[in-house]
Image 1 (tube, rainbow, N blue to C red):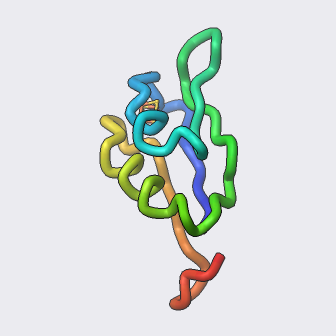
Image 2 (image 1 turned 90 degrees about the horizontal axis):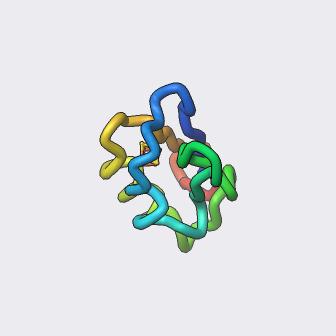
Length: 71
Ligand code: SF4
């Protein structure tokens, strides 16, 4: 899996940190998101999917590489 965030869309709601704090964090200054692990490990994929679902501005994108979803 790869994930990225469109920082232009992020409003700093913090939902992604609540869902997947091991993958996302917030900047100290303005509260917008930082991706800590752009290639999150498999045991965090469900949390990343939940973070993307919860994000109020649909700023989070993720994708897997190929049908096996092994990346
Ligand atoms: S949930 Fe979306 S809007 Fe909120 S901090 Fe994360 S990326 Fe930004």
